[in-house]
Amino acid sequence: MTKICLIGDSHVGALQSGWLAMKHAFPEIELTTFGAPRTVFAGLDVLDGVLVPATEKLSAYFRHTTGGQVTIENSYDRYLVCGISWAIRFLLPSLAKFRAEDHVKSKRVPLSSDCYAHVVLGLMRNSLSMQVLTKLRQITDRPVTMIPAPMPSERIPAPIYASLCASGDAGKIAAQFNAAAALLAGECNAGFLEQPMETLSNPLQSLYLYKRGSVRTFGGNLDIEQGEDDYQHMNAAYGEIVLRAAFAARNAEVDP
Image (cartoon, rainbow, N blue to C red; front, top):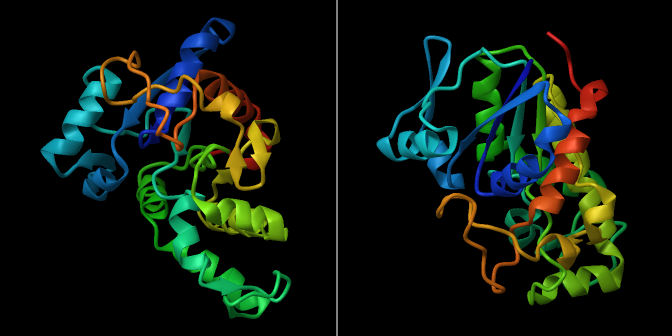
C-alpha cells in the first residue's frame, strides 16, 4: 500500500472529487487529505518532527478533511502540496504593473527580462506555499510534488486575461510562473507539476468544461456545488487528470 498525503487549500476539493471517481483503479493507494483555507495555513508549525496546527481553526479543518487526524507526520510514502498561494491570480495584480523586455510595449513599467523573472521568483518565494513546503521538508525527505492552483475559468470577466492573451504575453507569463515554481520546488528537492495542457483554454485560463459542477471543499461533504459566479475552482474531471499526472510524476521527484 502506497500512502499519499495531500495538503492544500480549497483546491484539494477537485482532487478529492477526482479521487472518488478513480480510486477503484488504484487499490494500492491510500490518500489522506489535510485541507484548510489558504490563509489558515499560516498557523502550521513544526514540533518534534511533526507538522501541527497552532490554531484551533486549522485543527478543525484538518479534522474535518482527514476524518479525525490533526497532525502531519513522516509516515507517508509521498506528499502532494496543492494550491495555497501558488496561483497566477495572486501574482497578476503585481505583475500587471510591469512588462519584461519581450512583452508587448505598453504603459506598464519596463523591466529587463532577468529583473522580471526575479520579481516572479520573489513573489513566489515569499508565499505561504513555500512556507508550507519548507516546513514539510523539516519533517520528511520523502518525495514531494507541488501542484499549483488551477488557472481561473475562461469565463472569468476580469479584462486582464483577455488583454494578456490578445497581446501574446499570456504564454510568456505562464512560462515564467512555471519556471519559478519549478526552480523553488527544486531548491527543496521537490517536483513541480504544471497544470495539464488539456485542461487549459489558453496559457492563463482553464476550460469551462473543467470548472462546471465544481464543489465546495469545506461545505458539506463535497456535495454542494460552487455557483456560476465562482471562476477559481475546478471539478472532479480536472482533479482526476491532475492526480493521474501526479501519480506518474515520479521522475520529477527525489526519492528518499
